[in-house]
Image (tube, rainbow over all chains, first blue to last red):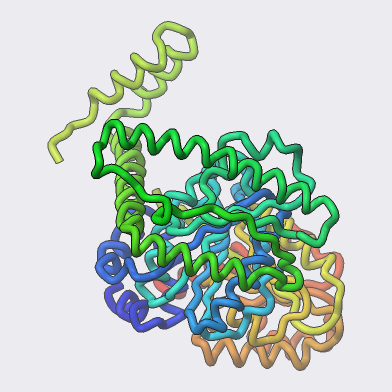
Length: 335
Length: 139
């Protein structure tokens, strides 16, 4: 195991691939891998790419990777596709659109199935990103499953989140709903050569414009409660912009890469990078705690006891809140 | 909470543009609970082997309908040895004349599936090959 992880750090592609398999296989193996590699992570710029199915995420990732390679970056790609809720199987087809990247030793692509996770990523995605980070990839592109409105986990994992929309996906009310548009650091309208694209761009710019007034109010609030120290000056703020791309031809991609680089510089200079790292760490610890707690419950509470409580809730003899409290009482907090 | 999923690469090396069969197989393996990585058309042997390595698959399935298997298969098998992933079982599907089957098996192909092979048969063969490989690797 230690051998394998040493090879990961030397950038051996076979070792990276095998370490990722272990991380995906179980929490305890993920723990063994991450514990050793973690001190060697934190260097990579993690970029999330999300958007509805068919908006062109994979094709854009392909183009972004090519553009980043021209800037001499080593690029790791994690592409998540959904698992079937029925068979548990998955068809991972993102490589079809990333054909151009094959054979480039500066690129490593790994496809992942979501395995029942609902937030647009797989449970092990964060750990997979760490393996690639420790292997020395400068930029890691994480492509989520086709996301709608609620799959926002990526924003907690990535330093920079790109949200991709395609023209003609709904009226302008869609764009002011809460959800994935809010997590964008960079907004992209792909398939911009389509006639309806101009309307989509206009709707998104309008949405951003409306957002600005809320932000001013937010600042007002900050000033009131935080005193002069809480003031954030205009130029320090990141301005979300809408970019137009045609991923199939590469049009507009260079501008997006420039926005990504600018966002990274902004994060570093404003101190926001560390804020995001802390948010991410907090989130990660909480998720691990939840999983661990459930696991321990399953181990400590006899099956019959759990079944009895479940039956009691279903029969309306007790309620779910009381039942969960009773379960919690089983856990020994001596560790 | 060990999650042991079989990961399969379904690849189409060579220049023929017929991927119906490969897609049917990919879908069938998915429905059998496996994670199938599909590469798309017109892959070079280098691309197939590199994908198998990066994805750390348990099994590779090749679909070749052009008759080029006599050139493509030896190249793929030799690249797999070079990259030290020749312990991964490789299946071949498509149009392969019966006379060529022994040669393919000598090259290291685990089994050849001709037209009309049932999905059930393929799923069982894949599961067995994975089990054998793991037994060979000592768990």
